[in-house]
Image 1 (cartoon, rainbow, N blue to C red):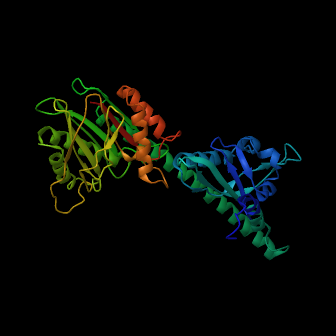
Image 2: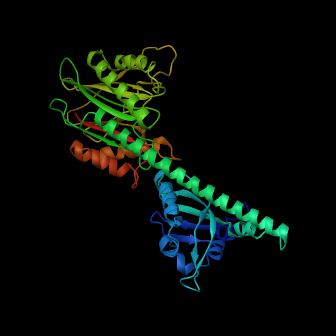
Image 3: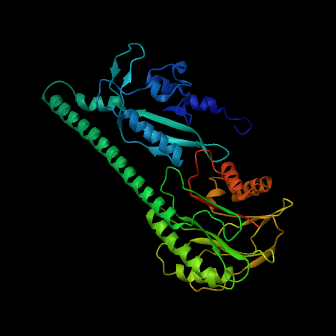
Length: 418
């Protein structure tokens, strides 16, 4: 096979299990021969049609939930990009030859994402194993007579037990998801209350954005801050990222942001501010491996002084379109060293009209992609839109860099016109 390309279409059709490919709109893109066989459908009855148009719930079964459960699973795969194995489902199928007649069927489904080049989910692999005969066999026993009757009785009890436990598992999972959704809403509300609103710092123009992760609890660890500094025409701009999610991450985020904001107002420079923050992080549960970068902008002398604790570098876009990553003062994350040592800091000059961008890794990181690719995308977007005002520029960057359905990690972005 080394000198021949593999015919993956033939492989797909020959798979021993029933497999279909669904689009993000939940329409059939393809189905193998085994899927057509077990579903009792021809290819032309599937391709291009919505899955629940082809396979609705049995209208005669008022408790039918197969369609609702399957749709919830498919949408979670789209939102999270994670594979999901479902509990045993009863999902009756209407006869293609005898409309109105429904066959009682039992299925064990698994749904898995297929990623496109940009890291978004472009297809869902929907694999189903039909276990109807297994369920029925448990109810038939070993044959006529007492032993067979008793075996049949035990089989029916086992069938009912199996199906009941599967339904209970499905309902428990749904309750957990609802509880997680409520926690996510509370955490986002807390995050919004603690982050500073988008505003001008002094008379300088700045835009701030926060975008929570979609369909996941991986939210509320990112933060930003803008403060007026004492002495001269200066401001401090910072962003950071807390490892964790939900209410705990939101609480840690609030503590670290407030501590850095206070330290920046009295520190001689950004490195000293991060030194103070690192010592504080050492006594804050949940602050382990948190990252942050802070910049002190001197508008009178056109100088940016910066220091980073394990965070992606800020981007300075000069007026001529040249892009400079501020990466000459990078150190390990907060609380990474058992004994604190002074952090480095660096300086760079700029001309009036340049643009500074600080961000968190949700903006540039994608699964199975080198981070340099994301940084190059960010640099290109900032350079092309550099003449736009900060608010317009921030929106353009998010539109170009975040996946259409939203990212799986939350994202903070600060744009400052210098």
